[in-house]
Length: 321
View 1 (cartoon, helix red, strand yellow):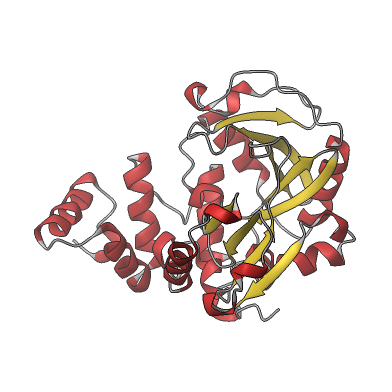
View 2 (tube, rainbow, N blue to C red):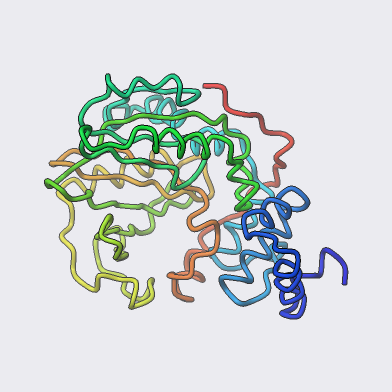
């Protein structure tokens, strides 16, 4: 069985799982090996494990399949810059939306540069080069500084793209970003509004509630704020009519302005005490393997993506800002 066909059948995947157990190879070590050897095979492996079906990224049709195609074949410099948690701030400012950026406290190349004593009582530390590289400080007097240093040091050594197949992350310079902690109501994470945009046009908003509780729920709304229950698995939704944010039109306008150059990008925003605050720009939601989206959502949003001309990773450079 050739390398390019090993994930084309359940038998091939079972052989890989058996070999991993026999040689006691950890999941992360195996992903790193696959990502180094062939990102294509890594993505096929991850897709099969989560979706239980074979992927053919060369003939994409659904939303996930087209996201994966762009993960492999469209590594654009502007996509890299806007994925970088720090560099994207310059893009937001250049588009006249700098007032929406959260307060910047510091940017560091390593943990030795962080003076924790000078930081405010509440803040968030983020790795600029990956997803879920976040540490929240909610009470400075109780914060585990040494544990945080060790965690950040581990993250700084990780090539996120190599483990998850999201190749644009591999071109980002690893740094640590410190921003003000966002809080709408005391003791609660703010509601997260994730606006799905296609060629500069907003299509729908995914509202994330319950963050920090271990029971995050997702509800979709169209641009007129009509509920789209058919877009998400019933057990993953809050199944309630959430209030339309008072500044929703401002959110949509900002998302469409930022998303204009891209076939697809999800613009993540917050509404904090009546003010729109920028979160991040996400080009590969769930790494192109979203098990919460329904088949209808996959097909509808897949049709909205017009695939760009291929652009390989070798033509893109690390962001320097």
